[in-house]
Amino acid sequence: MSHDPQLARHGLFDARVPRYTSYPTAPHFGPDIGPGDFARWIKAIPEGSEISLYVHVPFCRRLCWFCACRTQGTTSDAPVIAYVETLKAELTLLRAHLPRGVSLSRLHWGGGTPTLLSADLMRDLAKAIFAVAPMAAGGEFSVEIDPNEIDDARLDALAAAGMNRASIGVQDFDPMIQKAIGREQGYALTRDVAQRIRARGVASLNADILYGLPFQTAPRISDSVQKLLTLAPDRVALYGYAHVPWMSRRQQMIPSDAMPTPQERLSLFETARQLFLWDGYVEIGIDHFAKPGDGMARALQSGQLRRNFQGYTDDPTPVLIGLGASSISRFPQGFAQNASGTAEHTRAVRDGRFSTHRGHRFQGEDLLRARIIEALMCDFRVSRDELLQDYDVSAARIDSLFQSAKAEFGDMVQLTVDSFFIPERARPLTRMIARAFDAYDSAKARHSSAI
Image (cartoon, rainbow, N blue to C red; front, top):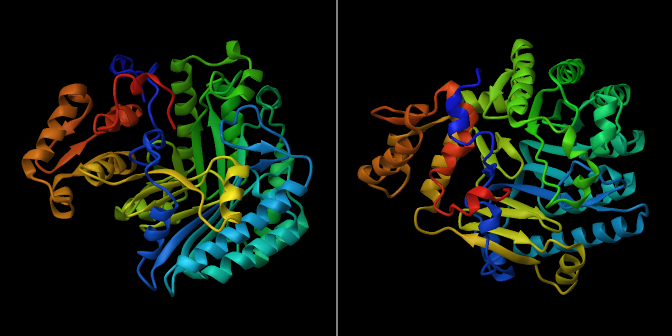
């Protein structure tokens, strides 16, 4: 992928654009969605249907400097034990509202560091979850695993609970880069954990790696990617590091003068991208790769690839319920987010109510625009006929939306009789092109940092 000068002209190297894991994006959520809405939306789930469940564990033994997620450090198990009790109480609330016969298509434990839970806490939490809803046939139970915070007892507990997909954060294997971002994690340790995961019959392995890190060069990222490929992950997320020290205080520990330029970032991405493609991986959207037989690659091929708060997914369910502090839920009616602080979240649950404190109720063209943005992020193409079939919208309105984006991006997008399409050379601009369909975007929002 060459450095087309039009990429710069359209803001690739200086714009801050949402990742569009939701529409509208979380900064546009408001306080008009509360516990009552959340409870009603749960009760409206059809009996016997499948849903997804996300469980957020916000604690870490150490706070990596590069991370801008909402986490908190702890050297003691006491707050973790208390938090699991809150999760169990929240699950009891959920069970009281959930219609009969609901099962889990996907279950994901994220963080933070969910593997800092002891083996006993893991078993306790899994038991509480499955008392509310069992895994559906063919369901997927995934857990984010920190190689620095796992042992055989915890791996045994997760495997016994049914974990069949594990996700390992790699970031970069270069020791100097690891030191600069506050995440020291050797290749040998990571390889050992991957082998121990697979030895327990866990069928699928995900890995995350970052580009755009301090001191990162083409040779260094090549070395890290090639080491990662020896682990043969089934899926890889190649995320761009967002250096926002004015928003994330811990990132102030990272030397800003060692950051690659925006043009160098694009070269780093392309270097890593080519290595994954040469190794036979299928490119998924803007920043994921999967082995050809993986469910995500199959979803891409069948047109069923979707996008949610965990990124790209092959999850077909329309409902994602988030448990724990700051978790976001998605329903056909809208989005609901729990209280961000663990103390506020715990108080609400102990009072016998959900901690929902903000969200968004779908209105107007929200669902139409959400689908257009998701289709661009997943397939780089939007079908006019699909929109006419699935949404209450006129052909003239669709044409108007497409023509407006075409006017902004010119030959960086293509219009056919049936579709709006992003050609390969323009795909680095995908998020910016998607933003053209964002009715909540504004000139001010375009220059602010995004979710």
